[in-house]
Amino acid sequence: MKTIRYSKDDKEKIVKALKKGGLVAFPTDTVFGLACIMEEKAIKKVYAAKGRSFDKPLPMMCASLNMIKEVAYVNELAEKIAEKFMPGALTLVFKKKDEIPSYVTNGKDSIGIRIPDDDFILGLINDLGLPLMVTSANISGEGSLLNWEDVLEAMDGKIAGIVCEDARGQTASTIIDVSGEEIKMLREGPMSLDAIREALQ
Image (tube, rainbow, N blue to C red):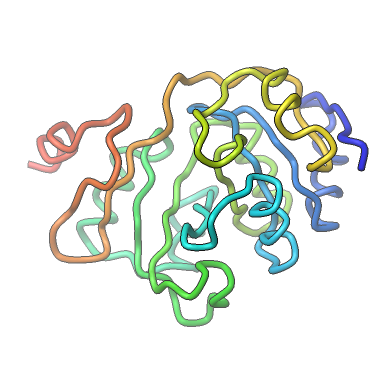
């Protein structure tokens, strides 16, 4: 497979590649991401490209809180956090809705979702009309990548395309579980749990 090099001006071509079940890597507001649509074959391609364990479900990106509510149960606390900190470098783990196929979360009843602070990605999602599954564009077990040349070196021939710009962030997003009555930190990132709690007071 030849990995096509895209610019952000190639949005229509990127949407077409994703709709066909292809994998596309692009820069985000955190680290470089690897995306596919919410389709079983496409999701399996991500695991193959990364060498990722099937024990780790893929995170999702949505374009709005309303889109999150279509795929996950959002309690009052989670909604407050989302309204204050999204879009941004924060992934919230929700309980998924029953109608979301089990292959999307590898049989788990929860799903991590983020609204990226990136107009290009939000545009892709809105053009698709559906959330994107997006994980870090690197080989599993290795560090997150920021530069498109590094991503291409790791993924060349394994993915359909790559957007040739660098990521804007330095670290992956903070991950917080909001599926219960209390929030729990799952991964430290640009946003601290203390800052989130303080903003909710």
